[in-house]
Length: 347
Image (cartoon, rainbow, N blue to C red; front, side, top):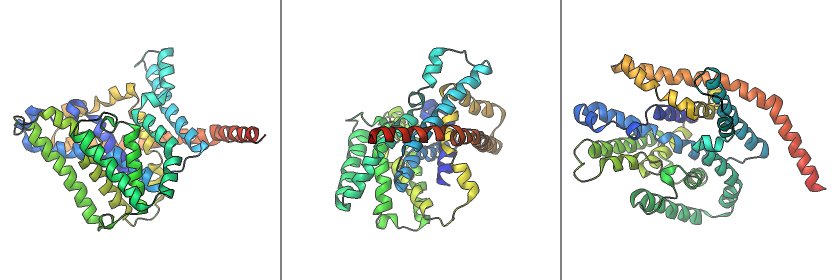
């Protein structure tokens, strides 16, 4: 369920990238309530990426050859597939250079590239988690997040984490998710309502900071634009705390296994791959201005939510073709190839 929620956050996040997604200074001044609510929604949506990686750590994914190959096929299916959709509809010109580019999904999608490297590192990370004791694990995370929050995010003394757009950032989130699942602690055992309050409170605080820095109140003291860039970083302490609190909240819900939820969740990553292909992205970013020109108020909100839900359902239906192709055609080939290689190695 949380994978679905996180993807809806990401879809909403990608609808608007201008001014790092926060309202402009004029909107802050002319319509402060609207600007504040928009900023709060923005900080909520920003947690989606961190949530996805934290979930991976929480459940300790153990990759195999078939699962890694499946992930690559998924990336290629949407990267190459969407390019040819735009070529066939005359929205893009056919080019061998473009075809070769789309055959490299790790370049087409920044998240896909970082996540593939994280998957490759998972066996080593899992082994470290199994061998290390709680004290050493906790000490490592404290030191790591001191560098993340104090050195990179606040002090600007490092660029390796790239505001969360990096494998190194993903490794930290993966380890944090695993620590919470294995060891937890009193702060992980709060009632679900407190986890939800922490999520809302941390995102609200980020929105308040954005309001102060970009609304004219704090521009004499800080650079509002710089502050907004920092608040939109996935390495922001408030973003990480918000994402972790929502993971904890959902982990305590007693929902059982619900087939239709699992069915939609299985295609959540495909939703990202479809709308973030860089030609599709340009069209996707035109949706919000179009809706804003034709609707306002509550109607505007309902249309935006409806668009996101309809797109998610449509991609889930399309993804059944991708899953069928993998299961019936490509997965057996990968299995046979893996068996052949293993036999050759034994010889």
